[in-house]
Length: 320
DNA sequence: AATGAAGGCAACCGCAGAAGG
DNA sequence: GCCTTCTGCGGTTGCCTTCAT
Image 1: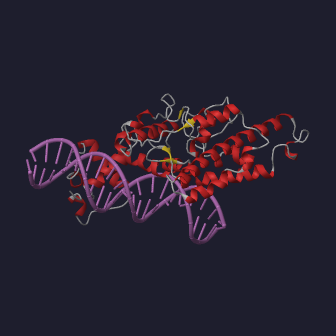
Image 2: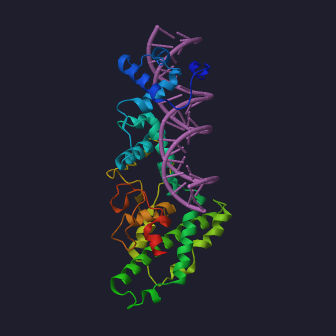
Image 3: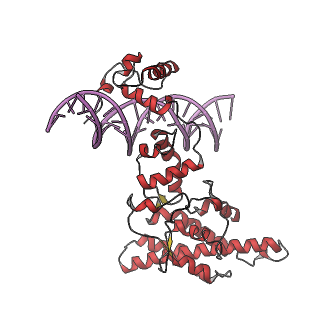
């Protein structure tokens, strides 16, 4: 199996299509249908290969092509279908009327894939990346937050009654409590990595060394105590470790109605860092709740289960 | 205002597989 | 079973626009 013979022919035009060529192709297909793509260019008076004509028609000239930006619903559909179908762009395109597989592929590669990666998700599995260095930016951000807390602890001049007083103090306290929750959760995760490494099952010395970054003594004896309930909640959240197949991923719904991929049970392990904030966001009743808007347009009202990549969260940046 | 970097997108290439004669 | 044609996909390229300096 090889390259289509038509593309080997020399003298055929390549590159961008001119309006004249578009018009010829459009009129011919509207009048005769495309028939055989191999013979179409000659019959239509085009100096192009059939493959080029087919691509131009299917990706641009087809009358039912929808132009413009992808809506949030379309983005969700793509994400959902991609989690099920993988890179089956044509199959995904059949569920998005007016969108071509090429358009969806480009949109995925230039937008959605980057977003998933940025948020610590594996774009192929749609699940939090479990490799340690994927979480490194988050760890660094957490370390910065820890330093910030150490330098400016609750009860300092900023939060003294009278300075801002009332609601401001309460908001600050809530934010600090949220941060404490994140820090403690991260520390627990890293401690787990460290103990695993120490046990020899994961000989990752670098990971163990970096544990010190996010598991300071100051976290545990902070002046802002983390509520026992939220602490228990975070500790009870874990993430399935089994590799994900397309079939297994069918339960992963981006529409909000399906079962959330993040499960909570009595296990002691914590999810990877990427879903820590999700655990907090999904349980507004606990002490770690906080409103976190999404750069993806989700936020509290978003049906997407994605956790926020909290270093970019306006809440965090505002705090810092 | 000029210029270079970065991002977005249309289009192409090479390959694989399906379908039909 | 072989050949031809068509379709689909991943990867890549090159042009254009936008943005930062």
